[in-house]
Amino acid sequence: MIMPYYVELRVMELGLTAGDIDGPQVRIYDKERVICDCLHYRNKMGTGKALTRLSGAMLQIQESASRN
Image (cartoon, rainbow, N blue to C red; front, side, top):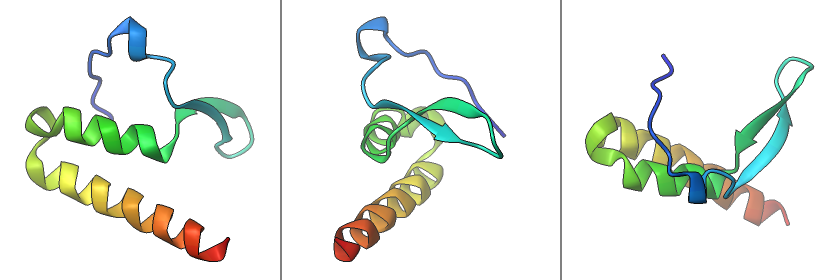
């Protein structure tokens, strides 16, 4: 389920990138931005969900760093 959250205009473009989702290009946020948003909105999204998202993002970053 996608839950919308208010984002201040001054930070809306931070971490914005493009990605393919089943073909079409869409605008998405990078992993670092997702981590920051999870920390910022942890009370709204629930601590359990925030920690799950943080763990997944950190694992992906560690795997990516170990490949390079």
